[in-house]
Amino acid sequence: MLEEVYRDLRARMHKSIEVLEGEFARIRTSRANPAILDGIKVDYYNTPTPLKQVASISVPEPRQLVIQPWDQSVLPEIEKAIHRAELGLNPKTEANLVRIQIPALTEERRRELVRLCGKLTEDARIAVRNLRREANDRIKKLEKDKKISEDDAKTGNKKTQEFTDESISKLDELLKQKEAEILEK
Image (cartoon, rainbow, N blue to C red; front, side):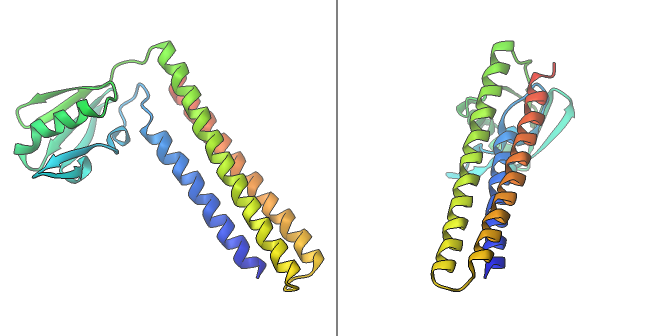
């Protein structure tokens, strides 16, 4: 019974970490990263389609992205979609591709991004703590229903705390890495 609680708790905490990693991937640093374009949808034959599905995205230089659509007719739509996303990027259409130069970040913008990362990390920590509380409630219910002993319940609560501590330290590690990446010039 407790193993099921542990399995569910670990999976859900892992999911919280993955969500934070995804959020961090979308935050722009001064290096080119195709993940900053992940949320962009292009109007492709009147259907909002993820950019990744209509073009290949490459990084030919550390501060440049190149988007090469499989269907050349979608080039203007790709450029419009990038402008609409308000990422602070200025796409330039050339022959059969879109080139984006990644501008250097100002010191003020770096501090804003670090604050944003801190907020996202705190949200993830809160989610992990809520998962711990839910798991402890499930353990308490199992004990109340006489499905596990009082000792098993105490052991279960300690184990959920260990999982929580592991997850929070992983979140903090991700934050530290992202802050270093943002502040790197």
